[in-house]
Each structure stands twice: as structure tokens, then as C-alpha cells.
Amino acid sequence: MEKGKGEIRLDLFLRMCPLFYSLSNEEIDKIKSIAISRRFNKHEIIFSEGDPAETFYVAISGRVKIYKVSPEGREQILHMVFPGDSFAEAAMFMGKTYPASSQADLDTEVLAFRKEAFVKLIKDNTQLTLNLLASLSRYLRLFLNLVEELSLKDVSARVAKYLLDMAKRSGAQAGRTIVVELDITKTQLASILGTISETLSRTLKKLSAERIIKVEGKKIIIIDKEYLEEISAGMRKEKDN
Amino acid sequence: MEKGKGEIRLDLFLRMCPLFYSLSNEEIDKIKSIAISRRFNKHEIIFSEGDPAETFYVAISGRVKIYKVSPEGREQILHMVFPGDSFAEAAMFMGKTYPASSQADLDTEVLAFRKEAFVKLIKDNTQLTLNLLASLSRYLRLFLNLVEELSLKDVSARVAKYLLDMAKRSGAQAGRTIVVELDITKTQLASILGTISETLSRTLKKLSAERIIKVEGKKIIIIDKEYLEEISAGMRKEKDN
DNA sequence: CGCCACATTGAAGGCAGTCAAAGGTGGTGG
DNA sequence: CCACCACCTTTGACTGCCTTCAATGTGGCG
Image 1 (cartoon, rainbow over the protein chains, first blue to last red):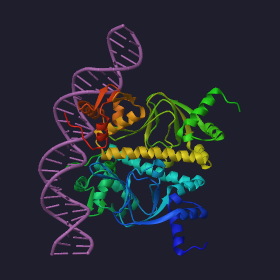
Image 2 (tube, each protein chain N blue to C red):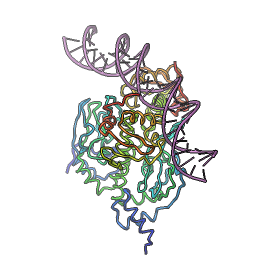
Image 3 (cartoon, each protein chain N blue to C red):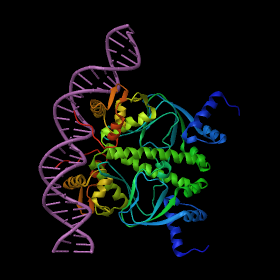
Image 4 (tube, each protein chain N blue to C red):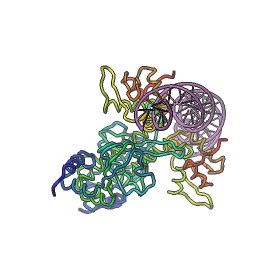
């Protein structure tokens, strides 16, 4: 079989996905043969909590939100999915239905995999299963972290932690300060941190008042990294006023 | 090789563990060959958060507590481990160190498995890897649930949910009521539910005052299951006083 | 320009945690 | 068998963090 250019690009993309890492050519081919390309418009629901979990996805482009909603309508974002990440793969092993909902946060392109077809591939592919194991443990760490923060830390500590994480991942050093650029709205950030936009706004204001950070729209400048680390660890509280 | 009686019993026990479910005789033998039997006295620490994660365990008897502690010393119980359950197996895939701590809640007997030895077994044992996958997804569901409750539900809803779960799992029907027997202290239950004993006490009192439940020490009688379900779902709040 | 979603700020109220003290319970050893 | 002690549980008073509600500010885009 001859390969088209797009197909080669897809090959390269798949090889970079954690889930398909270090698979052989034939295995990648098998993966592709059961993949279904799909597009979702911004804000379109991909699946809802309680739907039968018969499909999982790999994000190709765009951004996907995984979330839960409280009876009162408050939303907890569990995870933001970026290109290359798989999502809902854990759901396939967790039960009959999706335990959370999923929405395209931007115009998004995904590969969809039907459960039965994929499970067949797993059975005789050790590497794929190990990748899956790695993927589940990433989610496990994510949720464990979330539990810790929600249960044991206050909003300031969570904000501090998030900013430090962002700084490590994608922060731009600028003299003694680090610049972090939020790629989501503050309302969404609040929802990730298990709070609401008003509280986040006030928390950022308090941190700014103490010159630990500086907020300029979506740009946040970390001035005192050490202090922020102490707040994140709960060793120190920022003062009121 | 001839098998002693104790060894046969151990075989049977291992076969019943989710992690070793439906393994062949030889595989069980390999498992046993790398297992190390250990005992911990009640309240003895098995491992602490931050320790190098080089061992995972299967509980044989007793009870084990997996928990995190806040900077201020408040404790969140993540999971109670009962005989047959494995624990810390996820930690091996999550990073270098244990992400939580573990303590014997009763006198406890475990099998310990060194990471390297076990990882070798995984590599060419599909069934074991699949069992591991199942095990991780159980933990995933557990934590996801915890996140949902901590973030989106109030203490009454969490208590209601816990009681209903207990009722389903081990409740004794008694006429139109269901009797649930707590096998842990209320302080521990509070810590499982992400709160403290005082708050739990008050919550149980409120539910009692409305004749939804009746509390007699460690025995809790569910009087109005339907109402409890509505509280658990957050559709209804119990009133003050 | 005017709309709309997002962000900020203020005022008020509630849920749950803290602190303190008084019961209760179970287990151990005299 | 009882007394004591440690630990758990309950209750009260108080505090504070965070949410709710409401209003105003802001910034991007058709």
C-alpha cells in the first residue's frame, strides 16, 4: 500500500502520542485502520456523563474539556486535553458509562476508537497495554493531586501551585521574574481549581497586593517565586487587605 | 515440588485477588517466588509519602489506611485496603516516590513485591497486565468519585452517599429500614469523607432529627432511603435545627 | 458603536473548621 | 471486678473562607 502525504503526517503524529509511543509500523497501521476521524465545533458536546462508554478519543487539534457538573450547576473541570493526548480511554475500563462529560473548548479534531476494536488490539500487544497503563497512571496522579488540593489546601495554595506549574512548563524567565501566559479564561481556571471566578479574582488581587505576583490580563508575572512556593505548600498564608 | 498445606491456602488466596485473577499455575508460582511476607502492627507506618516507591503490597489480613496529610495536620483518607486488595501498585507507574502514606489500621499481614522483580513479570504476561489495568481503573474511579464529592457536594450529601453505599454493600434489611454497621471509627469516617469528626457528628444529628436515619453508636439505621438518596444527589437539603 | 462574554468589586450570608470542654466507651492491669 | 486511662464522640460558641447575589467595568468583534 502506498502512503499519501497526509497519511505519513498522521503516522508521525500518532507516534508522538503517549498512547502509541514506540509501536511498530504494523501496529500503527492497525491503529489507523480502526481510527475514525471526527470534528467538533467549539462548545460542542463530545459525550455526556452517563452515556454508554463505547468510544475513546485522541485529540488531533483544538482543545477538549473534561468536567463534572454539580446538581446546582457548578462545574469542576477535571482535565484539559491537548493535541496528542488521549481521553476517555480509562472510562472504557471503569464501567459501562462515561463518569464525566466532555466538550470541545475550541474547534477540535479527534480520532475516535470504538471500544471493541481497540480492546482486540490490546490483547496481543504488550507495548500498547503498557502505554495504556502509563496513561491511566497519569490520570491517577492528576486526580490524586486534585483530591489533595480540594481536601487539604485553600484557594491561595491552589492558585500558587497552578502558577508554579505553569511557570515550570511554559514560563518565560524575565530577569528575576517569570512570565506566565494563561491560555484559558480565568473563569475556566477557577473551575479547574475547584472554585469560582469571583474567588479567583480576589485571590489574585491579594497575591498582587503583596507583590508576589503581578496580573496583566492573561499575563501573570511571578515576582517572588519562593514566597509563592511557600504559599503553595501551605507553609504560609497571604494576609488580608 | 511438593506443596505444603499453607502454600496451597496461599495459592487459593492469591487466585482470589483481583490482581492475580485467572493466572495460570506457573504464573502464580512466579508470583509467589518474588513475594515477601511481612507483618505490621496496628498503627505501624508501612510507607510515607515521598519515600522511594520500590515496593507494592497485597493485603493478606488486617486493614490498611492510605492517606494524605495537610500542612496543618488534617488527614484525608484516600482508601481503606482490605484483605485481597493490592495497594501502591499504581505508585510504581506514577513516579519515583509514593504519592501518599500508608499505615496499618489493624495488625496486618501483607505480601510485598519489589518493583523490578514484578515489572519483569508484567512484560510477558498479558493477563497480569490486564489485571493491573483493571486495578488502576478501580483506583481511578475511586479518586474521581472523591473529587466529585469534595468539589461539588456538601457534607450531608457525602454522608448520605456513604451510608447508601454501605447499605448496598452490607446492609441488613429490617422491615422498612436498613441497618448499617460501621467498621471504622466516626473520626475515620469523617476523614474518608473529607471532613472532621465534629462536623460529621453534627451532620448525623441533623439527619437523625429529621428521622431520615437513627444512630446507635456504630449502628446506623436508614429509615427513609428515598430521602437519603435525594440528599445524596444534592436534590434536597436537610434543614437546620 | 454596541453587544456579549468575561472580569472585577462590594456586601452579605452560610457551611464547615477551630477551639474548648464535657460525656462516653472500651481495654488493661491491679 | 472495678478503676483508671486513653481515645472517641458530642456539644457549644466562634471564626473565617468561600460562595452567592448584584452591580459595574472592560475588552474584543461584528
